[in-house]
Length: 98
Image 1: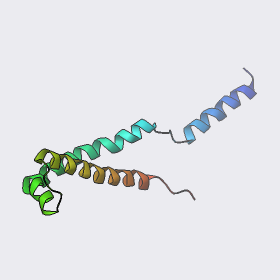
Image 2: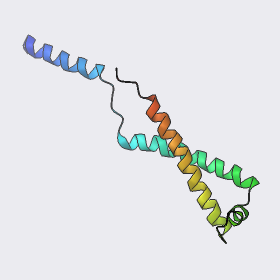
Image 3: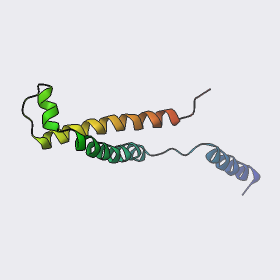
Image 4: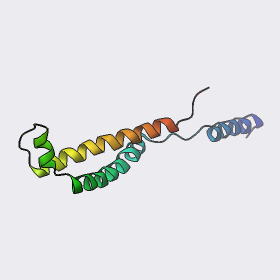
């Protein structure tokens, strides 16, 4: 190999080391959805230990919905809340471009 080829390989390897490695999209998605899923499960358990979903929905004028339906709605609302906070955390962890 010539000196030119060796220098080119060194330059390429230096550039690869200086640039941060990109995280795959599926890994980013799982990093947000999995912890928010677990947190939503715990929040649902704790919330519905103290509040009856049927009573809450009837008091707000939604008519008759089964307890299981109330638990399902509550879980998905908690999951939406916790996943949005995870997304904001990931967004604010990125360094600012100067």
